[in-house]
Amino acid sequence: MTIQNAVFILLAFMTLVPAALVVTVKNVFHGALFLVLSLTGVAGLFAMIGADFLFVAQILVYAGDILILLLFVVLLSGSPKDWATRSVNEQWMPAIVVSAAFTALLAVLLKALPASPAVPSAAPTTSALGFLLLRDMLVPFEAVSLVLLASLVGAVHFSSKKGDR
Amino acid sequence: MISLYSLTAVGAVLFAIGVFGVLARRNVLTILMSIELIFNAAALNFAAFNRYLHPDGVWGQGAALFVIAIAAAEAVVGMALVLVMYRDFKTILAESLDILKG
Image 1: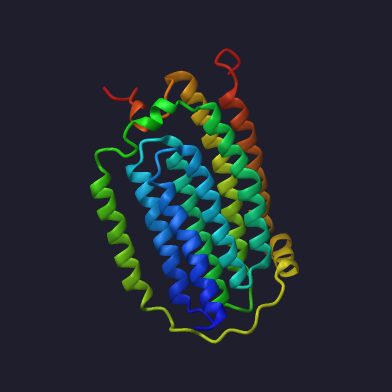
Image 2: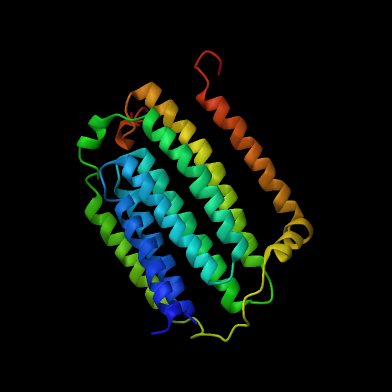
């Protein structure tokens, strides 16, 4: 086993085990912390396949931004009596069946992929991504900035008091 | 070099975990977190396919960046809605959202 495979297995476990804990633990605060561990594992996988800019963006956006937001909302809307009740609804058994069926289906479908194509060694992607975003994908880029502005305004609108709305 | 199959398998399992969370959990915040897991599975697959099938471009990574940006926007609006829900219903369990039920 090469060192690369060992690192990959480590990162896969670091992604999947906390992800499974997110949907199983009762305490939502702990769930949020596990979520960030899992998303950091995804960032590590990004780094493994040579997507260096995505690695940094993932850690900045998730560990720096969404974690803080999530923890604030967990604390503000926290009703510990909700954590004491059952954490899944009556449909948890069909839900397990559906997600297991999805996994099995994808495992069969992904067998059709080319086995392991030879790829050139990874190069820094930041400048290529900059050219892509500001030249080839300029219209979607501006659309996303509009979406972010709209979500900002929407968040302020929704969370203002009823009389002000 | 790790194979494309194992990377996409990690993405598929991550997606399935997220689907289970969306379908089965009662807490709205956990449902939001599961949606983040699904987004990340998609972004991971974009980056993996980019690396193995189209290594001379970065379009897949660009798409993954868009996924991350949309996920941030979704999280902001979703959590604002969770706060409003807590203010109006005093609980954030999904089954309490039944005011449209006849």
